[in-house]
Image 1 (tube, rainbow, N blue to C red):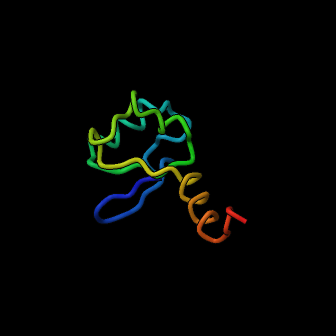
Image 2: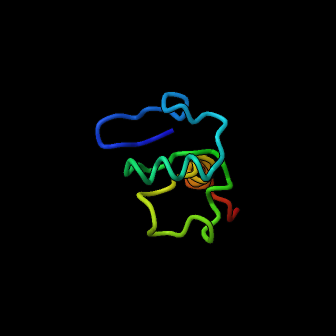
Image 3: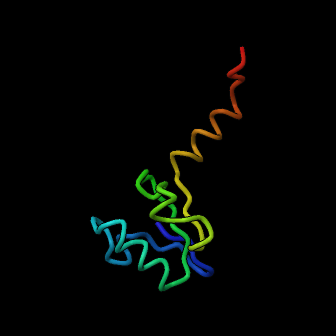
Length: 75
């Protein structure tokens, strides 16, 4: 899924469904888009260094953060 300035087309909308991470990343770079994904491969900071793109947001990490906020894991 993509987050752009004016719209939020999905990978399917862009013809990228099933494509490699490299193809998705290259598309996002060309279009100045951030990537919103559930693919943990995009968490590889060696392959996708912080600061080299508009942003990669992993939905799994975001969901975990919300759950963590909702429960006190220190009990």
